[in-house]
Structure formats: C-alpha cells, structure tokens
Image (tube, rainbow, N blue to C red; front, side, top):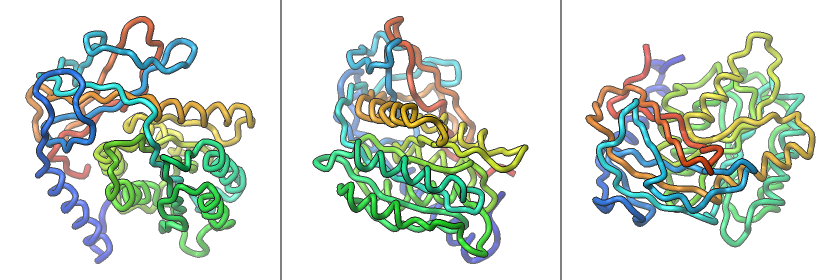
Length: 324
C-alpha cells in the first residue's frame, strides 16, 4: 500500500508533513538528572518517552520500582542519559473505541458491540475518564465524540452500522488509527492520562492511505496504546493476526480474542484497566540517535519480583521515509 497521486492522497501527505514538522520543533524542559520529574512535558525528537506497566507473578501491579532496579537497552546499548522516571498511579483514562464495520466483520459486530458497551458501562469512571466512538471500513466516522457519559457512549456504540459500508468496499485500519490519534488524542492533554485505542477488527487492511509504521509512529507520539479484540478472519491465509500483533506490540498494548467466554473477556477488560491505571514513565536520551528512520528495539528488564513488563517493543528514529 502507498499514497496515491489523488487530491485526497496529497492532502493526507500534507497532514503527515505538518504533524512531523510540529513534532520536530518540540523542546523538552525535563530535569537533567534521574528521578521523579513533572509529567506532561514536550519531548524533542532526540529523546524517547516511554510508559510501561509492571506486574508480579499473580498479575498484580508493581508500583514501587526504583530506577536502579531497571535495565534498559536501546538497540542493545544502554541510554546515554536518563532524563526522568516516575510512577503514575490511578491515572484518568482516555479511550478511543474503534469498531471495524467492513463486510468481513458482519458476524462479529454484535459481540464486539457488547464488549465495547461492557467497557463503557462497567469500567469508565464518569468523574475522571473520557472516551469517544469511531467506526471504520473504507471511511471512518465518529458517531460519539469525547464524553464521560456511559449512556452516551452506549448509544454511540449501538448506532454503529449493523452491516458493512454498502458498495464502498475495503478496510482502512491504519488510516482510521492515524485519524484517531491525530484528530482525537492529538487535541487533548494526552500526556497526563492513560490513553488507549480499544480496537475491534480482524486486522485485514486493504484500503489505507497510511502505512502501519505511520499509524504506530503517531500512536507513540500521542502516548496511545492499542488493545485489540481480534476477530477470526474469514480468509485462510490472513495477514490480520500479524498486523494486530504488531500494532499492539509496537504501541505497548495487547491482543485478545473477541469470541472468548464472558469470564475471559471480563478478565481481559480488567487487565486493560490495570495496565492503564498503573504505569511508569521513563524519559531518556539514546546513544548517537541517527535521523535515518531506522527502527530501534527497546528491551526493559526489572528485578525478580517483576514477572512481566508491558512496554512498546521499540520506536522509529526521526527522518523516517515510507517504505518502498
């Protein structure tokens, strides 16, 4: 997939360049020494801002980690400098509920709506949390903008089309994610909250004007993790599972199954809640970060009392160009 020479494609490319230019101009005010620093700082392109969740062997959050207990590698090398490290507990949540309405999802739409409604009614805190609803196939729409009302979210979820988008065939997952981050998360104070996209899809993308790498990049820069409930694809040799796994891994999320039992799905939603309410933030400067668009793999290890760490698998260096 790639950009076309159509007016729509050119306009989308202009949006990409605008966002990149705005991001490149950011400067950081982070304290120069490790320790607890103020959250919500702008970050320069030569610094990496990470959030991660740590859990023990029972799946319970570990919220008392010290910086000296962690081992961080960026492309196999320790960072040049740690600029900030802090524990972030009981964060307010900002959620984007994205429902795939393409024809391949017809059999799954009712169940996916039920899962989304369960999240809105049981886990969203009206005092602190907000969410929006987006549906997408070939095009993306927002039937319910940002709200803290479970009733409004439920109505928005139920309003999502019961069938695919008519004769407009195709599914544009990467474009929908890009638009959600740019137009929704990009316009709020996303640095002071736990942000995630609750994605319902089989992972099949055949109509995007954005690349997977661009969707991942803007998720990372708006501090937005992708948690996907995967539908079983109708196609035998589907690339969907790999696509969803990559989106989740590179943004610090997870992949679940939308046809699991109610008890398992309840536990999946509680897992998302624990991940987002209990996080750490780590800001660092890599060693000799080159503006070559290469992918940097991140490895973070904790002490023995930490059984698992949920963190994005890496990031793209600035200067990235779309793959040929």
